[in-house]
Amino acid sequence: MPIPAGLFRRLAAMVYDALLVAAILITTITLMVVMTNTPVAGHNVLGLLFLESFAFFAYFWIFRGQTLGMLAWRLSITTGSGYQMTFSQALLRYFGAMLGFALLGLGYLWILVDAQKRAWPDLISDTRVLFTPRSK
Image 1: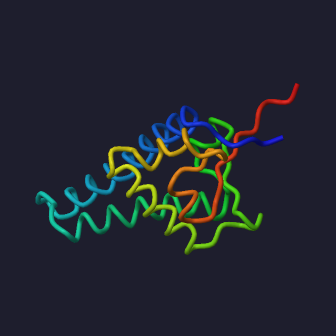
Image 2: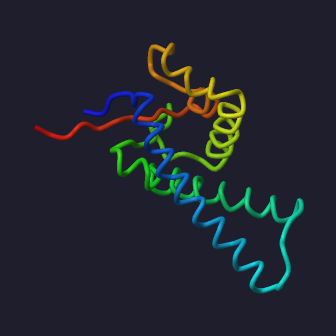
Image 3: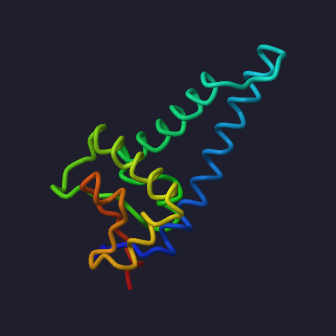
């Protein structure tokens, strides 16, 4: 029976996902440098990397209900209505996560005071992150 995910598991899954996203972004930058034979920088590059990272999370949240890091830590996302996450919910969740981190992690520390262990991205997007313990 799934239960609300705690802070440690969520952070562990985030580290795993951050490594995957970093690998994708480094590959993109490397390909851009190799193809143009010049250093790459600027708003266009940052915009592309931002879109790539959003695409990674949105794909896994919408179509799989969990990222690869979440899979490793037996976490999944469900919506308040119990349906598949929508694109707009994924977008809200992504911006909620960025806001939560930008404010020194306060958006995720919120899990420690919320009775249902929801972080700001959960509250903003009407989603919940659940942990499924191993069967006995």
